[in-house]
Image 1 (cartoon, rainbow, N blue to C red):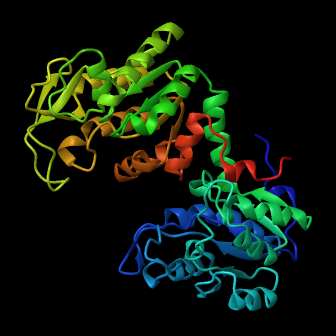
Image 2: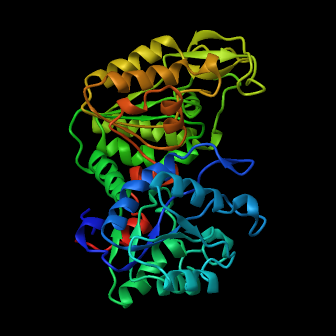
Image 3: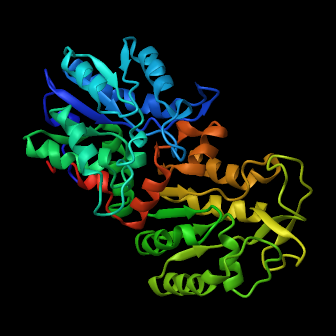
Length: 408
């Protein structure tokens, strides 16, 4: 997908609205992980060096209780100023595009950077299909000449600041481009799914089959081997007629799992399921607390026990499948990775990817958290910044934030 990027137009003297993903975790007003801020720096620095006037915007949190200081972007402006070594002027106004923003933009010089308040403080940001926040999008566009989307983590939302704003930028003859982060995501995820170097192995984990219905279906057509782990594996095991005890089970999706296994066979694809399982009496409480476990064959899970991780034989089977791969996409942990006793399966898969002579792509969310937690992030080819967005990409869906950018 060839989209216009920040390298395809000059920002010299232009007001550039940049949609970033600054949805960072906060504790007592302090940022606890600035990965998303760091990921946005290359695009921001490029536009500053071009002599652009940068107007940054982002959402933060779900803003269920209306505008509030706990979900203000003020801490992001402070951290960005430190990272860039220059002031990032913060527009505190809860209206986002009001008089404070208008006056600040009018006073900007080339190379200046301002950060608008949380876009979700405006109810018109989060929109229903075909009822996107036109007024808010138009107000955002009035502040700028050009628009750059670098918020892959939000690109699956047809929100005012993500896709609708491009209509108004385009009307005034401005550029609608993607930033370096978006460009990288499109390249890695797009190529992995549409044009992979083979053998192509896809690994899906996580709790629910329902969350990944379309991903399983789409990837079965694209990959050579599909590996299933995590809580969702038990619905597949049940579909094979096995007893799964008290393990997580989606009874409504048993027939779907049967269909997917039949589809894999028909297409000549390998579909690997756990052959042994780490079981316990109950889910650990707290989640990282001590838990007594044992390992059983996956077709012999006792009726009173619960599967919480893949066993050592399965870990070896999955690692072996990854060994010969040239492209690997992984989304979803193999077990309750937040618990040290139940993280071994996820760690084993992460290590197999780290050791593989392949393009390795981590599809955001819990998989990214697991890889970072295990100190293996630098061994992966690409770690996606968007859990939901990368999942929709793997489903084969078009993402509004990507579609809205100008074609080259």
